[in-house]
Length: 338
Image 1 (tube, rainbow, N blue to C red):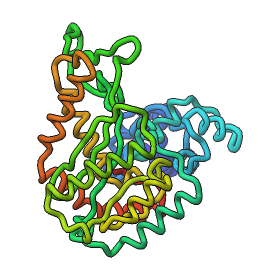
Image 2: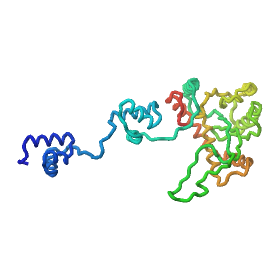
Image 3: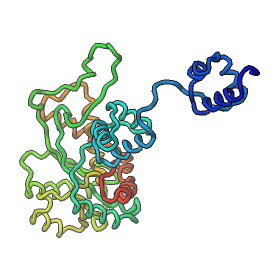
Image 4: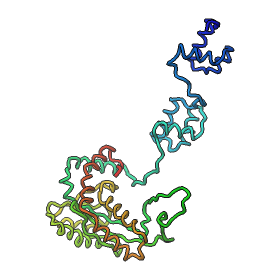
């Protein structure tokens, strides 16, 4: 230590504090690396060691720029962010560097969900509906009979299904989602649900129009009310704003009934728990090992699985309504996760 001049000694300490490598300092002053290491250990024991590796091309400020671009939606992809970064700052990096910055910030790529388009009028109506029902309790929501139509495909082709398979394992029949060249056919059904269990369901054999729809309500909706011994004066009936539902003959019949009809905002399937019940039905139909041999067997399966839905399943979905309303308010009328 004594052989090192004070100026040289101070210069070594300054270079170490600046993050210069021990190898570079040793070569600059013609001193062994071990001696530089001893100086560092004795006088700068808390100095953070360099992690080594290639210096980062993106500064913290550049990374924040990339994150803002993708989160705000100004740029839709990592490539678009990279091009914007180059145009604004002159920094040239590859797409992977930008994606690494995303991951470092806790972002992950996910598949875009398909949602109905919401116009400003739709958003306003959804928000007004949520505000007018934000103080409703579960007891209030219990009064509603929820209804909807649904297409059920022979091969349950709507949506995505998954299976687990080992790497290199040969594909087995249960790993495959079978379908026919032209879809295999489908049926259209109408159904309703109450807090106390699933309501009556029917297969729509002919083209659905206002007259067919009115007959369905006259038969299956009223049967549901009778089956569960509901007080019609306390019942609220929900259906969407399909033109057939708003037809004059249907409205006139509904006006004659004892039950109330709920005003429903357009483009709001996420607010209707019966949509989740349809998902349950589809999931159960997809668990059959073999596809149905025809539309009659498909209907028989659908009817069986619908009738096996429990009261607890229906109640749980309807009890989620306060949370659904809160979600609409939280997202200011936009889409929710339901």
